[in-house]
Every structure is written in structure tokens, then in C-alpha cells.
Amino acid sequence: MPRRPQVRSLSQTLEHAVERCDAPDQQQPEEIAARVRTGPRTRAGAPARRPLTEGRYRWARAYRDGELVCGRVELTVTADYRLGLAPHERRYFSARFFERLHPVLHTELTELVRRRGAPARRAAERMPPVEIVFDDPHRGRQRIVGRVQPPQARHRELYEIHFDLRAVAP
Image (cartoon, rainbow, N blue to C red; front, side):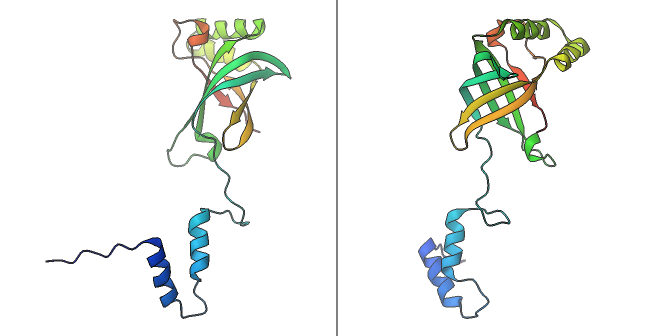
């Protein structure tokens, strides 16, 4: 009958490392334990930056040229885990514009909803970028500058439609 491998706890693993740590060039168990507890580090030795937390941010605000154009935006952040994407390309942003919508932005979004295909994409390119400000629970206040893209769903009220945001390069 084959023997099962022995399962060790962290303290048993550290004790085992102390016993095997005879050579001076090997890492000490304290260093190993410290690295296990703190997680990944960057080259400079500082803790790695946390990515934007996926989820919905219900109390975001939209600005354009420093002026509030929408008082309440529901922002959805999702991640794309495909290989070969840069970190800023791995995030998708989707926004629903709810309350206190500026009349100019309201007409631009209505124009995007009414058009399809290439005319909708051209109308989206003509629109100036929108700055979305929201509070991330791990990184504090965040700001995304992006261009509004034509929506996929068109036959709903304007506040129910999700508009994708394409982030503008910083």
C-alpha cells in the first residue's frame, strides 16, 4: 500500500527549513516567512500596486473640462485575463449615467443611442472625453479619462443603457 505524503503546517515547514539551513548562502527561515506574509514585491522592494478592484461603483461622478456633467454614474470595472494585454488594456469600463445629466451630454448620448454602425462610431469619436471620478476601496479616489462608445442595447431609457468607456492613454 503506498504511503501518503506528509502534510506540514507553516510552523513545521519553518522548523524543517531551520534544520536544513546549514550553508551560509541559504536564506534564513525568518526571511522566507517574511516573504510569504507580505506577498509579491516589485524590483525596488516596495509592495506591488493593487489593481483596480473589479465591481460596481455606484457613486461615481462625470466631469468634462472641470464641469460636472453627471452627478451620479454607475461605473462597472471588469478584467480581461487574456494573455498579451498590457495592464491598462486588461480593464473594461462600463458606465450608466443616472442623475443630473447635463443637457449637452444628454443630447450626445441620445445621438449615440439612435445611430448604429459606422455613424455611431464617428459620433463617439467627435465627443470630447469624459472624466469619471470614483472611490476605490483599496486605492482611494481614482480618476479615469475615457471616450464614450456606442451602446449595444438601444431600446431602453437613457439611464438604463450601459455605455462602454475606452480609456484615453495618460
